[in-house]
Amino acid sequence: MSIDRENSSLSAKSIYDFTPFTHLDYPNHLACIVWFSGCNMRCSYCYNKDIVLAKNGKYSPQDILDFLKKRVGLLDGVVLSGGEASMQDLLPFCKEIKSRGFKIKLDTNGTNPKLIGSLLDLDLLDYIALDYKAPQAKFAKVTLSNKFDEFSQTLDLLLERNFPFEARTTLHLDLLDEEDINEIAYDLASRGYKKPYFVQLFRDTGTNIGDIRESSKKLNEELFDKNLKIDLR
Image (cartoon, rainbow, N blue to C red; front, side, top):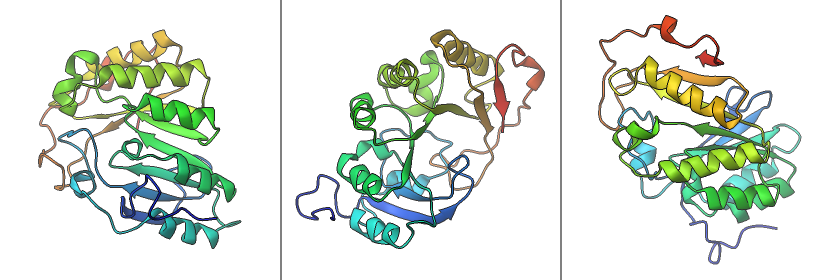
């Protein structure tokens, strides 16, 4: 069975690009990555400038399903990333992927708790990487959005359901500091998150949305609270 190109709520060219193979992006699984166009945030350090600003893509959902048909038994899963994948109606696409026996990992900023809840209700997701962009007081400044409450709902939802996920933050020292990372880690721990909290130090690629450069400030790992599970990548 294939997605009806005319009737599907997932637009025909919503997929910016895809990576046929990765062993890094889905823990302990061989997978491909589907990169959805567009995002509802404008984080200046974002590495995916072209994807975030794109209105259309190169591929349709059916293109990806045709690819997966040839990868049954060779790949374990599919990573849905972007941009922000949850801006799309992922239900029909995820149903087709799961019907082919693949696991699904979602990379998300967590700002569509309703969709994510529906995907969980239907057992259409197997793992989530949740971006915790900034503490509430700095969230709007970092993301140029006012969606902390929606993010918070998604975080609580994942914890309430004991769903397998990881929390992660990109740290640019002109935007956040060690105190902010501790604040995020405290918040995660207070809600019941017990896994490592991953912090990725920003590295300039020259393709960021704001053409933002690496900060002249230096990270002081000694300021991280040693009682919290902060994992610097």
